[in-house]
Image (cartoon, rainbow, N blue to C red):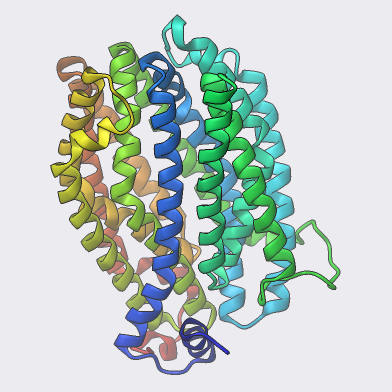
Length: 466
C-alpha cells in the first residue's frame, strides 16, 4: 500500500494539481525525517564533545583545533556527492528511474574514489596540522591522532553519506533517518568502549566514531543498492564511471561547491587561527558552543535537504511554479523553527554547555557567546534553506559568491578587529552580524527568481502550476 508521501510525490511527478495544504503536508512528510536525521547527527557530536570534554579542557581543545579541517575535508567530498544527488532528484521527478539507478552507481563510486585521495592527504599532513593551526604544544599529539584516524575512515563514511543522500533525493527520508539514528546509538557504545573501557582518550573518540560510521554506511549502501524502489541496482548492469554528460552536469554543480567549501571552510580555518591565540579555554568554549548551537540549526539543515528534493523533483517534472512555492514553504518553516529554538538556547545556554564540560570557565564563556548567537538564528535559517533551494535547481555559483562575500569580508574582517579587543565574545559578535547579512541576501536572491534562470522555463511552467 502506498503511503501519503508516495501518493503526493506521484502527483508531483505526474503533473497533477497539489493544493496548498497538500504542499505543506508533503514538505512536512519529507522534512520531519530529515530533521530527525539531523538530530541524531547533532546528538553524535554532542556525545563526542561531552565524553571528551569530561577528560579535560586540553583534550577538548585538541579536537576543537582540527574541527575546521574535518569540516573542510567533509565539504569537498559532499560537494562531489551533491553533483549526483541533485541529478537523482531531477531524474526521479521526470520518472526516469533507469537514469537514477545509473547515477547511484556512479555517484557512490566517484565519492569513494575522491575521498580516498582526501584520506591520503589527511594522513600525510596530520603530523604538522596542529602546528599550522597555531595550537599549543600540549594539545598537538592528541589533535594529530584524532585527525589521522578521522582521515582513515573518510572513504567509507563519505560513500555511505552519498548513498543516504541519494535515497533522500529519491523522496525516501525515512530510511536515511534510521541510518543516522543507528549511527548515533553505535557512536555512544563504541565511544564508551574506546574512551573509557580501553582508556584511549581522544584517540578512542576517533576510533569509536569511525567504526560507528562504517557500520551505518555499509547498511546505507546496501539499502540503496538492493532495496530502494527508485534506485536499486541489483540485476542491472552499467559502468561505475560516469559518462561525459553526467560528469559535465555534476561538475557544474560540484565546481562552485568546491569553491564554496574553500571559501566557507577556509574561513573556519582562518577563524581557528584567530581564536587559537586566546588559549585552550577559549578554543574549548568555542568548539562546545558550536556543538551546542547545532541543536538550534538542525531543523534548518533538515529542511535544506527537503527543499533540495522538493525543488529538484518539481523542476525535473517541469513544474517551476511549484518549485517556487516549495522554496518559500521550506524557508518559512526553517525560520520559524530556528527562531523558537533560539529562544530555548538563550534560556538554557549554561545548562547546554554544562552537559559537555564541568570546567566553570569554559561553561561561562560558552554560555555567553551562545546567547549572543541566538539573535542570528532566524536569518541563518534563511541562508541554510535558501542554499538548499538553489542546489535543487542546480544553481550553486551565485550562492557561493554570496557566501564568499559575507564570510570573508564581513565575518573575518570584523573578527580580526573585534577578537583582539573582546576575546571570544568579539568573534561571536562578528559571526552574528555576518549570518544576519547572509540570510537577508539569500532571501532577496530567492525572491528575485534568478535561481531558476538556467532552467529556461517556458510560459506554461511559469504560472501557478501547483
